[in-house]
Amino acid sequence: MRKERALSETETLALKRLRRTASSLGAVTETLSFGHPTFKVGGKAFAVLDRYAGEECLWVRVDPTERAELLASDGWRESPYDPRRTALICCLSAIDWRRIGRHVRTSHRLAALESPKRPRS
Image (tube, rainbow, N blue to C red):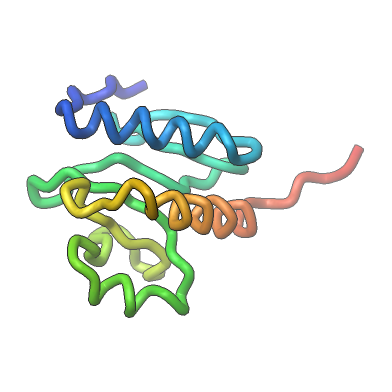
């Protein structure tokens, strides 16, 4: 198992806020992915605190109909490790924490839809 990387003060605050949002969603687990705090539903990641090109950011899945609009907004960028183009990253410095919850909830919903269905017993 990989060790959690050291978090900056900004990332620590972001993680607390993400945990608060995730606690209101169903069937969420918090894990580490390559040392990054990762929130999953049904085994699929829906939010990851990460660093890309030296920038602290939040990775989330996005609704395809909102992708272009978000990319035109400050702080939003394509995720470098997303060949299916289903996610974006948002720089932590650009996040409006009063509004990001909607994107985290959308990401959770999209991940839940993608997760394998469990057989009924």
